[in-house]
Image 1: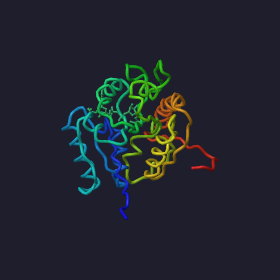
Image 2 (image 1 turned 60 degrees about the horizontal axis):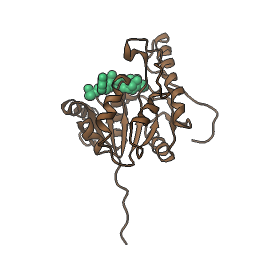
Image 3 (image 1 turned 30 degrees about the horizontal axis):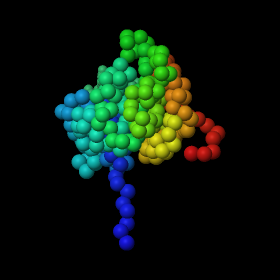
Image 4 (image 1 turned 45 degrees about the vertical axis):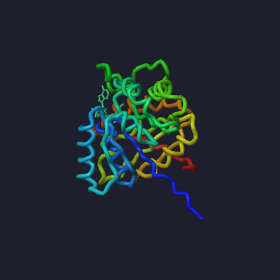
Length: 232
Ligand SMILES: NC(=O)c1ccc[n+]([C@@H]2O[C@H](COP(=O)([O-])OP(=O)(O)OC[C@H]3O[C@@H](n4cnc5c(N)ncnc54)[C@H](OP(=O)(O)O)[C@@H]3O)[C@@H](O)[C@H]2O)c1
Protein backbone atom coordinates (compact mmCIF):
# COMPACT_ATOMS: atom_id res chain seq x y z
CA UNK A 1 0.00 0.00 0.00
CA UNK A 2 1.28 3.48 -0.86
CA UNK A 3 0.80 5.97 1.95
CA UNK A 4 -0.25 9.47 0.90
CA UNK A 5 2.05 12.04 2.48
CA UNK A 6 0.76 15.55 3.25
CA UNK A 7 2.81 17.96 1.18
CA UNK A 8 4.67 20.43 3.35
CA UNK A 9 2.90 23.80 3.51
CA UNK A 10 4.97 26.73 2.34
CA UNK A 11 4.25 30.13 3.89
CA UNK A 12 5.30 33.29 2.05
CA UNK A 13 5.42 36.49 4.06
CA UNK A 14 5.14 39.46 1.72
CA UNK A 15 6.93 42.33 3.45
CA UNK A 16 8.58 39.81 5.79
CA UNK A 17 11.60 42.12 5.96
CA UNK A 18 9.58 44.50 8.18
CA UNK A 19 8.74 44.30 11.87
CA UNK A 20 5.45 42.39 11.82
CA UNK A 21 6.31 39.94 9.04
CA UNK A 22 9.74 39.27 10.50
CA UNK A 23 8.19 38.49 13.89
CA UNK A 24 5.73 36.02 12.35
CA UNK A 25 8.52 34.47 10.26
CA UNK A 26 10.67 33.96 13.36
CA UNK A 27 7.87 32.29 15.32
CA UNK A 28 6.81 29.96 12.51
CA UNK A 29 10.35 29.11 11.44
CA UNK A 30 11.12 28.23 15.05
CA UNK A 31 8.07 25.93 15.01
CA UNK A 32 9.51 24.12 11.97
CA UNK A 33 7.44 25.68 9.16
CA UNK A 34 8.89 26.32 5.71
CA UNK A 35 8.98 30.11 5.32
CA UNK A 36 9.66 32.33 2.34
CA UNK A 37 10.45 35.97 3.01
CA UNK A 38 9.16 38.24 0.24
CA UNK A 39 10.52 41.68 -0.50
CA UNK A 40 10.47 44.19 -3.33
CA UNK A 41 14.22 43.42 -3.52
CA UNK A 42 15.53 39.87 -3.42
CA UNK A 43 18.77 40.95 -1.67
CA UNK A 44 16.73 42.50 1.15
CA UNK A 45 14.76 39.26 1.53
CA UNK A 46 18.03 37.30 1.64
CA UNK A 47 19.41 39.64 4.32
CA UNK A 48 16.28 38.95 6.42
CA UNK A 49 16.81 35.20 5.92
CA UNK A 50 20.41 35.56 7.13
CA UNK A 51 19.12 37.40 10.22
CA UNK A 52 16.62 34.63 10.97
CA UNK A 53 19.32 31.98 10.59
CA UNK A 54 21.66 33.91 12.87
CA UNK A 55 18.92 33.83 15.53
CA UNK A 56 17.49 30.33 15.02
CA UNK A 57 20.35 28.41 13.41
CA UNK A 58 21.21 27.35 9.85
CA UNK A 59 18.88 24.35 9.89
CA UNK A 60 15.60 26.33 9.69
CA UNK A 61 13.71 26.18 6.40
CA UNK A 62 13.72 29.85 5.37
CA UNK A 63 14.31 31.31 1.90
CA UNK A 64 14.11 34.81 0.43
CA UNK A 65 12.69 35.96 -2.91
CA UNK A 66 11.21 38.97 -4.64
CA UNK A 67 7.51 39.28 -3.68
CA UNK A 68 5.88 37.76 -6.79
CA UNK A 69 8.29 34.83 -6.88
CA UNK A 70 7.71 34.29 -3.15
CA UNK A 71 3.92 34.33 -3.70
CA UNK A 72 4.16 31.84 -6.58
CA UNK A 73 5.80 29.21 -4.37
CA UNK A 74 3.42 29.42 -1.40
CA UNK A 75 0.30 27.64 -0.18
CA UNK A 76 -0.26 30.37 2.40
CA UNK A 77 0.54 34.01 1.66
CA UNK A 78 0.72 36.51 4.50
CA UNK A 79 0.60 40.23 3.70
CA UNK A 80 2.55 42.45 6.11
CA UNK A 81 3.14 45.74 4.31
CA UNK A 82 2.05 49.29 5.20
CA UNK A 83 -1.51 50.05 4.03
CA UNK A 84 -0.06 52.76 1.78
CA UNK A 85 1.73 50.12 -0.33
CA UNK A 86 -0.94 47.43 -0.15
CA UNK A 87 -2.75 47.99 -3.46
CA UNK A 88 0.44 48.05 -5.55
CA UNK A 89 1.84 45.02 -3.79
CA UNK A 90 -1.35 42.96 -4.27
CA UNK A 91 -1.45 43.95 -7.94
CA UNK A 92 2.20 42.91 -8.29
CA UNK A 93 1.64 39.43 -6.86
CA UNK A 94 -1.94 38.46 -7.72
CA UNK A 95 -1.14 36.83 -11.07
CA UNK A 96 1.52 34.70 -9.36
CA UNK A 97 -0.64 33.28 -6.57
CA UNK A 98 -1.40 29.56 -6.64
CA UNK A 99 -5.06 28.76 -7.34
CA UNK A 100 -6.89 28.10 -4.05
CA UNK A 101 -4.10 29.45 -1.85
CA UNK A 102 -4.84 31.00 1.51
CA UNK A 103 -4.16 34.71 1.89
CA UNK A 104 -3.82 36.21 5.36
CA UNK A 105 -4.11 39.97 5.49
CA UNK A 106 -2.33 41.66 8.42
CA UNK A 107 -2.41 45.25 7.17
CA UNK A 108 -4.05 48.06 9.10
CA UNK A 109 -5.20 51.28 7.44
CA UNK A 110 -3.64 53.61 10.01
CA UNK A 111 -3.98 57.34 9.35
CA UNK A 112 -0.19 57.60 9.76
CA UNK A 113 0.06 56.12 6.24
CA UNK A 114 -0.89 59.57 4.92
CA UNK A 115 0.74 61.70 7.60
CA UNK A 116 -2.03 61.46 10.22
CA UNK A 117 -2.08 59.89 13.68
CA UNK A 118 -1.32 56.17 14.19
CA UNK A 119 -4.08 56.17 16.81
CA UNK A 120 -6.70 56.67 14.08
CA UNK A 121 -7.69 54.63 11.06
CA UNK A 122 -8.51 55.77 7.56
CA UNK A 123 -11.92 55.22 6.02
CA UNK A 124 -11.68 52.44 3.43
CA UNK A 125 -14.53 52.33 0.90
CA UNK A 126 -14.68 48.50 1.03
CA UNK A 127 -15.00 48.64 4.84
CA UNK A 128 -11.54 47.41 5.84
CA UNK A 129 -8.08 46.67 4.47
CA UNK A 130 -8.97 42.97 4.45
CA UNK A 131 -12.10 43.58 2.34
CA UNK A 132 -10.04 45.74 -0.01
CA UNK A 133 -7.61 42.82 -0.37
CA UNK A 134 -10.57 40.49 -1.04
CA UNK A 135 -11.75 42.78 -3.82
CA UNK A 136 -8.30 42.93 -5.45
CA UNK A 137 -7.53 39.21 -5.27
CA UNK A 138 -8.71 36.44 -7.63
CA UNK A 139 -11.96 34.77 -6.51
CA UNK A 140 -10.21 31.40 -6.04
CA UNK A 141 -7.94 32.83 -3.31
CA UNK A 142 -9.23 32.25 0.24
CA UNK A 143 -8.86 35.38 2.35
CA UNK A 144 -8.62 35.73 6.13
CA UNK A 145 -7.73 38.68 8.35
CA UNK A 146 -5.56 37.99 11.41
CA UNK A 147 -2.63 39.17 13.56
CA UNK A 148 -3.69 42.80 13.07
CA UNK A 149 -3.85 43.45 16.83
CA UNK A 150 -0.65 41.55 17.70
CA UNK A 151 2.52 43.44 18.63
CA UNK A 152 5.57 42.99 16.37
CA UNK A 153 7.87 43.48 19.33
CA UNK A 154 6.14 40.68 21.25
CA UNK A 155 6.39 38.39 18.21
CA UNK A 156 10.10 39.09 17.79
CA UNK A 157 11.03 38.50 21.43
CA UNK A 158 11.60 34.75 21.45
CA UNK A 159 12.42 34.84 25.16
CA UNK A 160 8.80 35.68 26.03
CA UNK A 161 5.41 34.27 25.16
CA UNK A 162 3.36 36.63 23.00
CA UNK A 163 0.53 36.78 25.58
CA UNK A 164 -2.19 37.97 23.19
CA UNK A 165 -5.21 36.69 21.33
CA UNK A 166 -5.87 37.33 17.67
CA UNK A 167 -9.31 37.64 16.16
CA UNK A 168 -9.64 35.80 12.85
CA UNK A 169 -12.19 37.03 10.35
CA UNK A 170 -12.97 35.17 7.15
CA UNK A 171 -15.82 34.01 4.91
CA UNK A 172 -13.94 30.78 4.21
CA UNK A 173 -13.85 27.96 6.78
CA UNK A 174 -10.67 26.39 5.39
CA UNK A 175 -8.83 29.71 5.61
CA UNK A 176 -10.02 30.16 9.19
CA UNK A 177 -8.89 26.67 10.16
CA UNK A 178 -5.48 27.24 8.59
CA UNK A 179 -4.97 30.44 10.56
CA UNK A 180 -6.14 28.73 13.77
CA UNK A 181 -3.41 26.12 13.23
CA UNK A 182 -0.77 28.79 12.60
CA UNK A 183 -1.75 30.65 15.78
CA UNK A 184 -1.33 27.42 17.80
CA UNK A 185 2.36 27.39 16.79
CA UNK A 186 3.01 30.69 18.61
CA UNK A 187 3.46 30.31 22.39
CA UNK A 188 1.09 32.48 24.41
CA UNK A 189 -1.36 33.15 21.59
CA UNK A 190 -4.98 32.08 21.23
CA UNK A 191 -7.09 32.32 18.07
CA UNK A 192 -10.62 33.68 18.33
CA UNK A 193 -13.23 33.16 15.64
CA UNK A 194 -14.23 36.71 14.73
CA UNK A 195 -16.86 35.68 12.18
CA UNK A 196 -17.09 37.10 8.68
CA UNK A 197 -14.32 38.96 6.87
CA UNK A 198 -16.34 42.19 7.19
CA UNK A 199 -15.71 42.12 10.97
CA UNK A 200 -12.05 42.88 10.25
CA UNK A 201 -13.16 46.52 10.12
CA UNK A 202 -13.71 46.29 13.89
CA UNK A 203 -10.35 44.54 14.52
CA UNK A 204 -8.49 47.16 12.48
CA UNK A 205 -9.94 49.83 14.79
CA UNK A 206 -8.64 47.86 17.80
CA UNK A 207 -5.09 48.18 16.48
CA UNK A 208 -5.31 51.96 16.45
CA UNK A 209 -6.71 51.83 19.99
CA UNK A 210 -3.85 49.56 21.13
CA UNK A 211 -1.28 51.96 19.66
CA UNK A 212 -2.78 54.75 21.82
CA UNK A 213 -2.69 52.45 24.85
CA UNK A 214 0.96 51.64 24.11
CA UNK A 215 1.76 55.35 23.99
CA UNK A 216 -0.02 56.09 27.29
CA UNK A 217 1.50 53.07 29.08
CA UNK A 218 4.98 53.46 27.51
CA UNK A 219 4.81 49.97 26.03
CA UNK A 220 5.12 48.41 22.57
CA UNK A 221 3.37 45.16 23.43
CA UNK A 222 -0.24 45.86 24.38
CA UNK A 223 -2.51 43.03 23.21
CA UNK A 224 -6.05 41.80 23.78
CA UNK A 225 -7.53 38.77 25.55
CA UNK A 226 -11.06 37.43 25.06
CA UNK A 227 -12.08 35.69 28.29
CA UNK A 228 -14.74 33.24 29.51
CA UNK A 229 -15.22 31.30 26.29
CA UNK A 230 -14.95 27.51 26.14
CA UNK A 231 -14.26 26.54 22.53
CA UNK A 232 -10.66 27.02 21.24
N1 LIG B 1 4.47 46.67 13.64
C1 LIG B 1 3.46 46.21 14.37
O1 LIG B 1 3.55 46.08 15.62
C2 LIG B 1 2.16 45.81 13.69
C3 LIG B 1 1.16 45.18 14.47
C4 LIG B 1 -0.03 44.80 13.85
C5 LIG B 1 -0.24 45.07 12.50
N2 LIG B 1 0.74 45.70 11.79
C6 LIG B 1 0.48 45.97 10.37
O2 LIG B 1 1.31 45.12 9.61
C7 LIG B 1 1.77 45.80 8.44
C8 LIG B 1 3.29 45.77 8.43
O3 LIG B 1 3.75 46.47 9.57
P1 LIG B 1 5.31 46.68 9.81
O4 LIG B 1 5.45 47.42 11.08
O5 LIG B 1 6.01 45.40 9.64
O6 LIG B 1 5.66 47.64 8.58
P2 LIG B 1 7.06 48.08 7.98
O7 LIG B 1 8.17 47.45 8.78
O8 LIG B 1 7.04 49.56 7.85
O9 LIG B 1 7.00 47.49 6.50
C9 LIG B 1 7.00 46.11 6.23
C10 LIG B 1 7.61 45.87 4.88
O10 LIG B 1 6.75 46.35 3.87
C11 LIG B 1 7.51 46.78 2.75
N3 LIG B 1 7.13 48.17 2.42
C12 LIG B 1 7.40 49.28 3.10
N4 LIG B 1 6.86 50.38 2.50
C13 LIG B 1 6.24 49.90 1.40
C14 LIG B 1 5.50 50.52 0.35
N5 LIG B 1 5.27 51.83 0.31
N6 LIG B 1 5.03 49.73 -0.63
C15 LIG B 1 5.23 48.41 -0.60
N7 LIG B 1 5.93 47.75 0.37
C16 LIG B 1 6.42 48.51 1.35
C17 LIG B 1 8.98 46.74 3.14
O11 LIG B 1 9.52 45.55 2.59
P3 LIG B 1 10.52 45.56 1.33
O12 LIG B 1 11.22 46.89 1.30
O13 LIG B 1 11.43 44.44 1.69
O14 LIG B 1 9.68 45.31 0.14
C18 LIG B 1 8.91 46.62 4.64
O15 LIG B 1 10.02 45.93 5.20
C19 LIG B 1 1.19 47.21 8.48
O16 LIG B 1 0.03 47.28 7.68
C20 LIG B 1 0.86 47.40 9.95
O17 LIG B 1 -0.20 48.33 10.17
C21 LIG B 1 1.93 46.05 12.35
